[in-house]
Image (cartoon, rainbow, N blue to C red; front, side, top):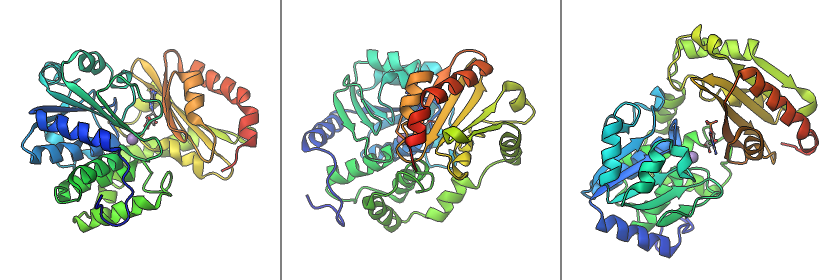
Length: 351
Ligand code: 5GP
Ligand code: MN
C-alpha cells in the first residue's frame, strides 16, 4: 500500500473492502455517536460526514443528546440531528438509512434510546471505535483499542480506502484533528505513538490551523465555568493521600448557583492529576435524575475496571465513566468503599 510517510496500515484488507462496498451500495447514510458527545465523537462523526457528502451521499449525523458549546464552531454542526430536540426526525433517519456508521462507542447501550432504533433498522451497520470489548453485532467491526481516538481511525480508514489523502479536505482535517486533540487532552496523554505526529503533520499540510482549533476548544469557556471550577477545586475536593486518589463532587444545588450550560464541567476531573502523587481522580456530579461519574488515572491504574465494579460503567484504562442512581452522598460512600478495596492496587501503582 502506498501510504504517505511511514504510516502503518492499521485496518485489515477485509474490513476495508467490506466498508468500501457498503458505502458504494448505500445512498442514505446515518452516523451515530455516543451520549453526551465529546470532541472525538463529534470530530470523527463530522469528519466522516464531510467525506461521505463529498462522495455524493445523503448523510446525517444523529446524536442522542446535546454536545458542548465549545464544539459549535465545527463545520457541519448545524446539520446534526439531536435526538432530544427532534426525536421523530432522528427516528425516521435511522429507520430509513441504508447504512449506519456507529462511531466512538462499543455497545448500543452507549447511545441511549437510539440503541433500539439502530438495532431494529434494516440498515447495514459498521462500528468504528477504540474502546475495549466491542459488541460483535455489527456487519463490520473496525475497532482498535490501542489507538487514542476514533478520529484517528477514521482518518486512517479514509487514507487506506483511497490509498492516499486526495479526498481529505481542510474541513475534514479540522474535524479529525479536533477529535485527536480532545481525546488526548491536547496530546498530553495516550499520545506517545509517533504516528500520531505524522498524522498531525499531514493534517497541517491539509491546511488546518492547530493553534486556532486549540483556542476554539480550550480557550472558549464562559466566566461562569471558571468560577465554578474555582469553587469546585476549593470547596468540593477531597484528597486521599494514602490512596493517591482525589474526589471532586458537585450537587444540584452547587450547580444552581452558577449559570451552567452543557459542557461547563468538561475537563474538571483532570485537574487533580496535576497534584504530586495523585494518580486517580474521580468527579461525581448530579446530573438530572442520575449521578454521573467521571474517572481518570495516570500510569497503569485501571480506572475503567473501577468504573465497571462500582458504577456500572467502563471506558479506557486512563479515562472512564459510569452512572449512579441515588443520592450523591451514597455515590461518594460507594467511591470511598471502592478506594478501600483497591487500596493495595493503588499503593502499588505508579505514574
Ligand atoms: P467522560 O468522563 O469524559 O464522560 O468519559 C470518559 C470515557 O469514559 C468516555 O470516553 C467513555 O469511554 C467512557 N464512559 C463515560 N461514561 C460511560 C458510561 O456511562 N458507561 C461506559 N461503559 N463508559 C462510559
Ligand atoms: Mn473517543
